[in-house]
Structure formats: structure tokens, C-alpha cells
Amino acid sequence: MPSLPDMTKHRGFPGGMPGTGVQFTIRRANPRGVTPIKALPRKARPGTKEHRIDAAFLHALWHHFGAEPFERGNLDAARLSLLFGREVIPATKEFDPLSYEAMLVIDEKVARKNFPESFEDVFEV
Image (cartoon, rainbow, N blue to C red):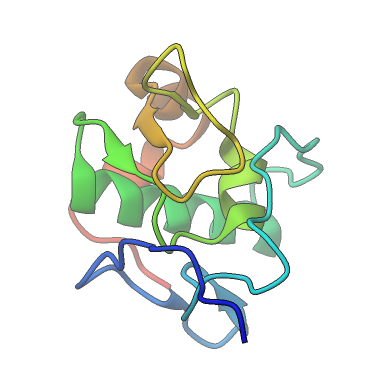
């Protein structure tokens, strides 16, 4: 069996949204290759379950990393892709969407505008 690529595991980061089955992290690298991060259209409207899940994920990102750049690591590609290009952007010019080592950063101005609840101290699930 081929060895899996190295992948930083963000210790202490929530594994998902309680009660939904939605994951925020992955357990191991994908043996079929790294899932690319790409901006996905977001259909979630404020007040919907999908919007709450995006807000909860952004809350976890903000309270774990703050304004500092962070490595993609074991963060779920689908969750990141729903925020990518808006609230979460590449932290470097040489961003590789197929790398677990890709560096990202929260665009705080955009994120606060779109998900003000994500910046509260406590996020009620």
C-alpha cells in the first residue's frame, strides 16, 4: 500500500458540528489523492441549517487560528471550499489547492460582514 502524504492534524480543533453528521476535519490523508480546495457556490442563506454550519466552522477557524495564517492540514476540503475565495483566502502567492501544507488565512473584514456570529466568544449549536 502506498504511503499517505504527511498531513498536519490540528489538535483541539472540533471534529464537526454536533448533531448534524457534518465533519470539519478528516482522520487521514486521502489515499486516492488530495481533494482540491476550490471556491464552491454557497446556497446557504442566513437562518438556514447550512448557514449555521458554515458559521460554526468559521467560528472554529477564528477561535483556533485567529488572524494568523494556518496550514490546511486535516481541515475538510468541502467545508473550506464553501468559504474559500471569500472568508478564507490563500495566505501565499504560491498557493497549491492540492497540498495539505497549503497556507490559508481568514479575510477578517469579509468574514465579519458575512458571519458576524462567528466572532462571538461562544457559538450556540
